[in-house]
Amino acid sequence: MQHQTANQLNPRSPLVLDTKDLPRRPGAMRMVERTVPAPDGLGLELIGVPPRADLSLSLRLESVSEGVLVSGTVTGPLEGECGRCLRSINDTLDVEIQELFAYENSTTDETADEDEVGRMQGDLIDLEPTLRDAVVLTLPNNPLCREDCPGLCPECGVHWDDLPDDHSHQQVDPRWAALTDITTQKTEE
Ligand SMILES: [Zn+2]
Ligand SMILES: [Zn+2]
View 1 (cartoon, rainbow, N blue to C red):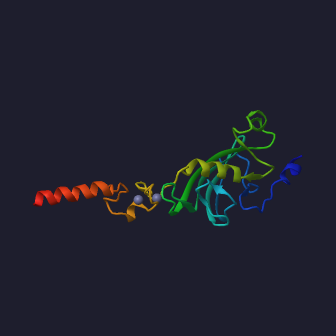
View 2 (cartoon, helix red, strand yellow):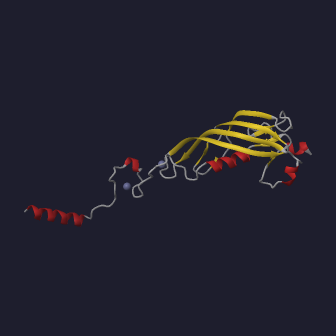
View 3 (cartoon, rainbow, N blue to C red):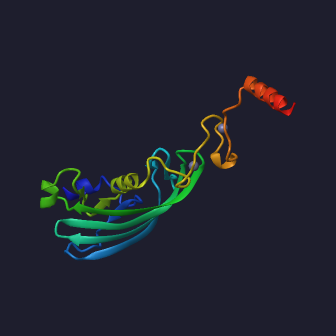
């Protein structure tokens, strides 16, 4: 039964953690430091990790009575687009991960709800769903190139940074302009 399910995950896949050398004794620990290529579509519509970019995993695997607790950080490059001005954003992803993966056939495995805990497949842990969830929760839906990005002028679409302070599209009506001239002339006479 165990190897049947274990076959579903590929231990060589970059986001699969193999715990075979982690003793199943509560308190046993192992550190995982590894750089892996980012999977496709890691992020949100406007910002995310470019596919295949280097993701650095710095994780601690800890045996607990019912499974393995994985915690640590994942960092990598972020590319996106400012939600106000569409300028490109280059930033760094730094996301915290903490999830319990239950041993197969453990009480937790059999009693916990589907989305409450992760499930191990034999000695293998699939970190990808956990990572995707953590990344989506960390990233802003509306990323900004900088916090006070003023955005674009709605009339001409030019970035406010590139426009003079008094930029405006309220043009003086030419007829009023003519009247102003007359008034000025009269005053001058
Ligand atoms: Zn912006
Ligand atoms: Zn304008």
